Length: 208
Length: 178
Image (cartoon, rainbow over all chains, first blue to last red; front, side, top):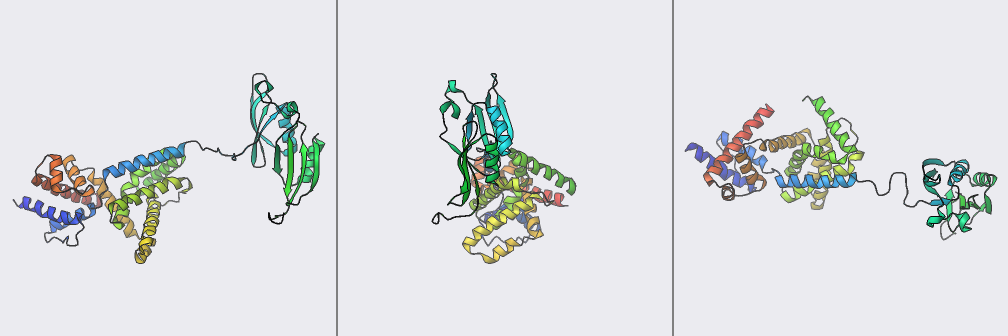
């Protein structure tokens, strides 16, 4: 009977602890007092459902992180994709004049390049041979290019000289521009058009 | 396990999770009770304590790639995140003194959270009926009558189970700390 009354007393105290009543009193009985210490700590016992739900949510978030990045490492949002007649020679040309690094090359069974990537400065450029039969013509087949690729480099004069020496056609000679760049425009031997520039001074849009 | 072995094991877990975020759940399992104990002690309202605990682990997962292992326990980093989140919440309630205490966590603060975490874990080692009573009574805050109905026992029997469970927990806490 003593045991029974202990469990009753304990439950009364537990009730007060759970309700966070300030009257949750210290028990006189040392045994009961020790148990109430445990009970007071247990008041913050976490819900098992909460622990499981949070774990599931963390696993879901971890999986999202695990997924491949939408913009892969090394790429920017926009990347030029140049179509060329004789892409292999063009890659050599870009290596020579721009100091480009070849990152990858995928040759098709007929020897044409299906896809290749080079890097100039911090930017990648994708390259492929033309496939006129599939509606993918090069500038030479089209008789011109409607796109200009703009490069910022350390020394525009030196690069333009290298390009012209290597057979590029100077379209607009290098000169200081009102917007703060020193720039020139060329067509490379494969028909792609480039503006090569070095930024010289900051000019506000109002001052331009 | 010796402290140095524990540290080495934890370091492996951290590095594994940094390489493969799905391994974060191991770190979560190891630290959940500590963080919850730390937060719940300072945030009396259960819903809010759960919100903050969840946010601690979301932030830890998000910032894990930048975590640099410097020999301090992973839980110290989690406590720091938790303390910042609690301070933010208190700032809105303008509790200046309490925030200053949070900014200067003592060893006692950490030990107190570890102690409670241990107790929470020991609940899982109780005989099933006792464990059920403790979880329903304390975590779910159900009345003796509700617990009795759900377990199909008398209220007196549930009170007895509650008593035995608390006795067992006290004994086991003593053994573990002894």
